Amino acid sequence: MRPITILAIIAVFASVALAPATGFASQASRQKNKNLWRNLAIGSGVVAGYGLLHHDTTTTVIGAAGAGYSAYRYEQDRKSQSAAARARARYYERHHLRYHRRYTPTTYTRNGRRYYHYDGRHYYEDLHTGARYQIP
Image 1 (cartoon, rainbow, N blue to C red):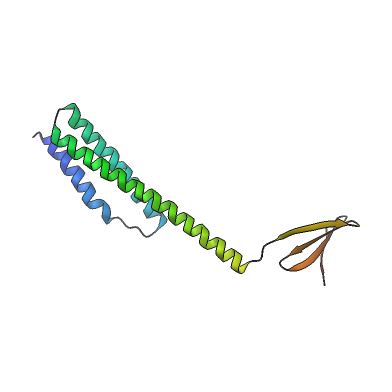
Image 2: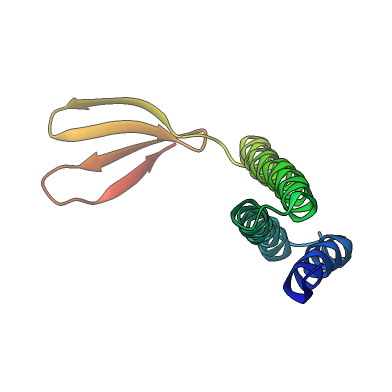
């Protein structure tokens, strides 16, 4: 085998073996991990292309296998990142609904005053001056 082929095979195996060592704790590390798998898929595809151009079956198979596995892991990380974002949004929506009251858009205007409800209380706004008052 040629030295470049051996180097390419070692690079693919080393990058796949060392990739799981990256952390999964934070959103930034998730993004870095996802980008790493994408770049490994591109690099392995280049190795497979090199093998095709030079009619080297071993390099082609190893590059294609590395590209396929890296693409699979990239897709899994992408789905995981989306699921985490959905879970985070769901948590904050529940928290907001539990600890904060919603604004109820039941407003009406009468005699130059706009009446509305906010946070369980009744208010009116004087449309001429812009002053707001709570109704007891």
